[in-house]
Length: 132
Image 1 (tube, one colour):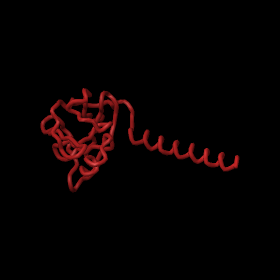
Image 2: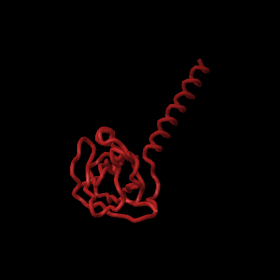
Image 3: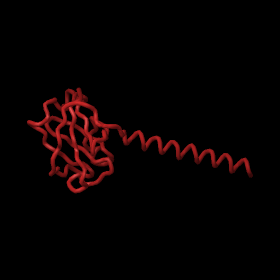
Image 4: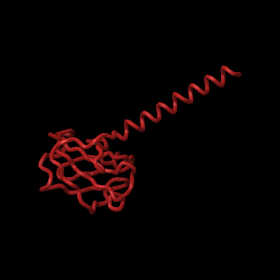
């Protein structure tokens, strides 16, 4: 019986550690990288589900992704000075899963916040960075 308790306890530790590691990797928390920064001002348009969008035509100089260049954009997003999200994410996945996923497609940035809150009312500052 003691052996069974030890095995179950060890498995529980492994499962909790695994889930915690995945959560931390998904958050991708780090400081915003150096480069040309552009504050993305409110309002953000509701895109779908957990996703919001911002037209960046004329304020972001680097080209966004396109059908023939799915990972062309070098743009990164920061929330309150912290790097977040997964770039080049399909819009449907941004809308359904959120958690900071984003896409810079053409002249539009489609993104979700790190905690899936509404960026129009959560009080956080969103910055797009063209890394050096």
